[in-house]
Length: 408
Image (tube, rainbow, N blue to C red):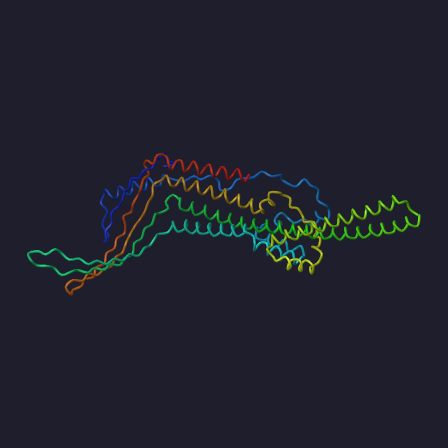
């Protein structure tokens, strides 16, 4: 039944079973054969797990000859093509304080904590989906005390019964719906891990940007102070020249105004550096005195890096971005969910069984008994549900289309 147009209720066929193996009568064999034929004709047809995103075949920006001569082969992409290798990139800045501040910022970031919780939720959902493919096993225990009603003036002694047993149930994943659900959760776990890495990269970039801004501000402040000192000295000399009659009063006044302007600019620059320092404190959650001490003891700033080589294919670079990777995993998860929704429209096959041991005691005598059974093997056919399952397939397909559009 390729994509059956069923609107499901449930019709159940159950093959009875007993503790001992019983020969199947012709009607039972015919029922099982018919069920096998029906099941064999059904199959899910999810959309592709990946979609292509158009990108230019190569960069158009010119690359310096010195860089082109040492450019890596397409197989040696930045970060070795692995998202996890992005973590070590900041260490290449040769600034120990920067690495320390990034680590502090990541430890204090609520976004990273939320992303870590998302990983735990996705991992739990994957375990639940995988467990649905396995048989369940439950233990049972019961105890009872009974007495028969008196008969002909005679009363029977009470009977105490204790039973211990195991029950199992297994819904056989004939059409792959359970496997599709498990795969969807696996892809979402990978996406959650990418989001966690994306949060770490974002925090690192924000901390580094603020750190660079503070270092640049400190450099500009030194320049401004030197300029203010130079203009103040010029104003002093101009004042002496005016008093000696070598310069006009207007020239000395201009020199004084220039010195005042430079002092005002220095004050503004110092205020900006204070704001940058407090912003870095907020990002890293470090005590401000500790941060100021570390800044004073550390080198002026990071060492310049050589220009990195640019791979030939932009799509290969984009694929390393955690957000792009997460979007790709979302497409794969949505594809699996379409398959799971399609499988839900098909018949279900379940097998149950149990083993029970017990002991009864009455009037000083006891008797043990054991029972077991395998079955029934139960086939449930969807007949009518008002279009719920068909709507679920349409909704899953729409989510897939949306995920594919977001990825492109």
